[in-house]
Length: 396
Image (cartoon, one colour):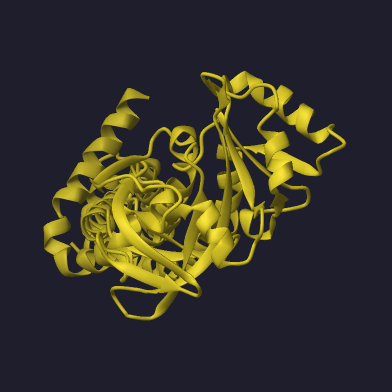
């Protein structure tokens, strides 16, 4: 066993050392595999960034209450009297005698994208004072808090970055609503940073909504309180609502977009991988042809066929690993942190987010590269292992 391992390592190292002699053909395989990894990792980083942004808005100790049958705030509707009942549910965190729950509106307004000038659906959220306490990660980083009862509004930092007309100190109009931006907030990079927030009562009047809302966001006194909170709401005959943990709600919203992006990414990368595998096959066949006499000599000296097969596979996978590493570095430098906005198909609104090239995606790209190297080197390795010693030695 030790002898076989020693022979295999010797032949593999010999093959790797001779790669510079076949640099042009080796470079073709490396570049092909690097290209596949760049495409795969960069496309999946879109899904990862989108998912990270939406999930950042959710917390297991917060809940969202919607009209029964609603999949999102966009399709929900609650009367003010119903939201008042929701705020009486057990399990809510309290600030003195006041429950930490906020009834909120959710509508879409048109704002031009800074990059293209094309109109985009941007979320406008009508809030209550408790909204800032429920979402304890929200911080005003420029300007100040809005005064409730006025047309003042605050806007998320991502929205300022991606859309025109919502800069600090500016005023914008949408329908009958006129808002003055007095503050910019952050929320740990969550999807809330893509929104404009104003007093819900002002928004209700501008949109002729009367005393109605889309949802109630509530902070629980503990994660374990959710079941009691949910059961009280769903069994209350005065209500027809559903309650979900906030993190579960936002996780469900990522599903459609993530599946779409991942599907496109894997299809494109799969087609490119076919070309990269053929490139690796041709590269390794060329390597075997170049090393025919060398392999035959080693066989004549007593090196077994399995050592030759493993060494050729090892060389192919070493080239693939190099290509995968190069592709991963290019994807990270070129795409990680790149900021853009896309549609959330659950609410038909824009969500600003940044591409996220994570260690998991890099490792996945390297695993894919090694798989391409294995497939590309397998048949040339079998040919090298079966090479007749006598006919090869005639070429000496």
